[in-house]
Length: 316
Figure (cartoon, rainbow, N blue to C red):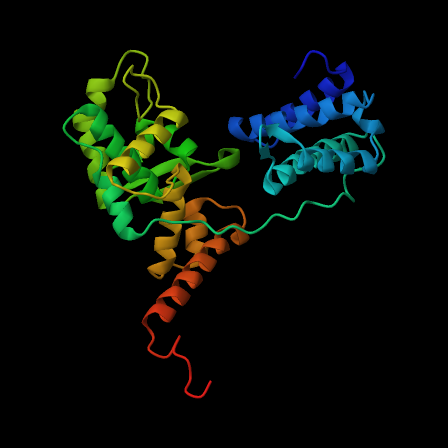
């Protein structure tokens, strides 16, 4: 937290973050997102002379939401509604925590309206595009074997990028064809990998990782050129390079592979609850957004192929 913030605010946020880390088991990335949003909030409070979050009123929180919605965080760039909604969620976590701890008698954030966030559907790759992407990394050197294996693993098991780079060698079972992933709140799940993923990992473990390994490598599965654990940024760079070599004009992010994994399973007839388990979603509603993607695709195929879908009736 910033040194110029009142110590009471700093302490309140610090206790919340400790609670979220220890009691709720939130990931480091999620905790950092909370920290950034709460820093903006407490700086806003301090600018208005508020030194204790237990004295905040509902109107102040509404003003904070309006403030975020109206300012530019960089020249010509404003916070999206989803970013403002996320910040409000962090603020609500702080005030509900203080209420639960008995430090205040009411939660001033409870009545603050959440910004309306437009629904955006995931944009998956087609099966053909995924095939081109996964075939893009060269397999003639250790780094290329690593690149192909991490992309095959992310798509084959539907992993988040943090889950993929967090894998250890012992998390992979090539005989069973599965990986053990640790998702949000350290929730463990075992996911099938498929023969292409198994093949890529087998080649990497045999001919790639031994060449990259150094004394510092430890149990990490995917290594960088210095022998350390591959970072999220490093994995994203690998994906970006593969997309460029594959000639994909659209924007491809690590989550694009996860979106594609879910969409292709549903299009292939998988039950949505099975996909929920494979993705490690706590809520079925999170998974069901992918059913909307497949419904939209069905409509596109229908209107493109059915002879009477778009024809104008005679006499109309």
